[in-house]
Length: 354
Image 1: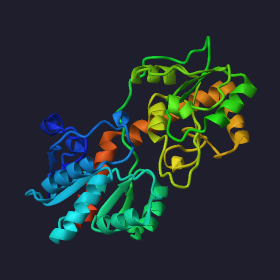
Image 2: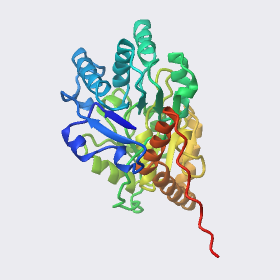
Image 3: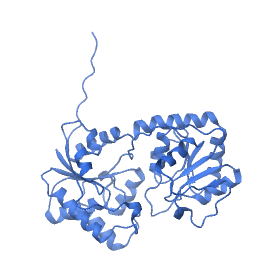
Image 4: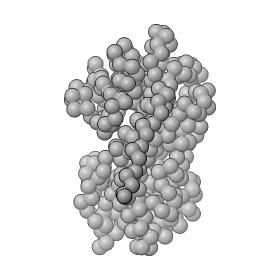
């Protein structure tokens, strides 16, 4: 079966080089036609507003039409705007093309009644939603009044990361990377009490109005490679998260990358983090809003070399197996088979020596 694939960030170079999971699928059961966006979409980090503008919606509508009207048998979308646009077009055209919404995450789902009605109307025509945490299945099925069976959990994929730096044992420190929905007040209270050097690589907005202890340094504007160096040299990587009712996901990429780099991770157990971290095996989960739980975890891992190193080794091995593009491509193939009602390809029988 031939699938159109549309993502807001696809340009002609992505299409020419097949820069997506489709490049990891060798099965003849499915083929893929990546479709570039007609007009470039602004980088999310460079936007002056954090919502989809009218002109951007026009671009999504045009991109969706290219996919739905192509000669392919089905459509795969990335991110939530494109499936919303395609769902409406399917309804208007009475199209029966199957649509899979890959990487479906709407961020903040507590919106006005009109937007929710539009979302329910358009997205009811999507055949399968692929989400990156199990708790999102409960949220979206209830919010959209759709059966849970229409949602599939696939872990967020990431390329492997080369480890270039070792833990800094002469001047040990904690690293806290990222900005979205971080509970820095909780972390800073503990850091000040325990008097542990900490480096926070975040945004000025995320730290605005927060009292920063003397033990904490906050380098702004550093590169991605600088952040990875900090993560690798840190004794512990801590991702403190604030639980919010209207938020569906936060911190997953930071956690995955720390695990891929073989670092011991402490993360707040919210937003489906237990889908990524096995407590006591590949990392350490702490209760959200609990300074006591966070303090105990930091003290334990800071002082226990054997536990810290074991968690790091286990995390790296687990992440390389579970969060790889190859593994995600296998999951994609199963999702597509399920949507069109195909049975999985039978495994070749094992050869028995005589």
